[in-house]
Image (cartoon, rainbow, N blue to C red; front, side):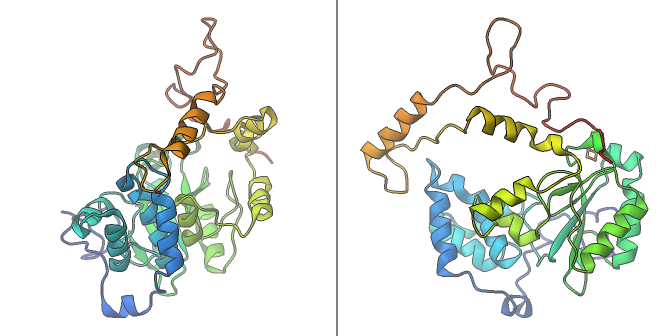
Length: 311
Ligand code: FES
């Protein structure tokens, strides 16, 4: 398997055999342990799903939130709790690029070099940032501040060229703005993303991806949502839902749930699901305010705001 563009010789590769999980003794010795709390949280994740193995993806994010990458200890924990083999867990963890096989820096900087971003300068941005940091694709700076990676399309082509930090968007970058962004991160600053929630760090956002708040309490979470951003339209849907009193429908749990929920409780979930109001859909023009065409399935309905940059 060949190295990705921008990779250093013999470093970042895409093949499983040549890119194993980092299990070097010095790496493992430096890791914080997976605590009993982590195991309890893993079980909490499992209880959310009708089939326990469906919990594997958020569990892997949980492991990363504790240890910074999918460690051998994390693989073992997932396998034990889900009744899977380590090979099965590893097969999943090595399939998706969001699961890291080596320790990740405080921030993960992803530069989109896919078609549209590349045409508009994404590769030049990657090359400049790579030179500044002295690292190639999937490598981490010696001070542990930044892991740099190429990214495939980040689903924000209308804001190309796009850089994300810990999956938060920094739209319409150029070489100089991206270099400034990365320099600020190395100084310990957290520049405000172009839209969405404020930047935290890789482990914090991994916790969020596992389905737990990365904020200390409700107030802090609220403050993160309300933080000023340069493109407020991203949160318009959330605001409208709050104004209308809309919430996501409850998740049903069958009697066979691994949470051990008794049948009566499971039946309650099912009833709540049936009683939940239909989500307000868009007027489809045929007299039904239905949801036949979910947002995101038509051009221009990705849920992103208009490309109007506020001053
Ligand atoms: S090509 Fe870069 S976000 Fe789509």
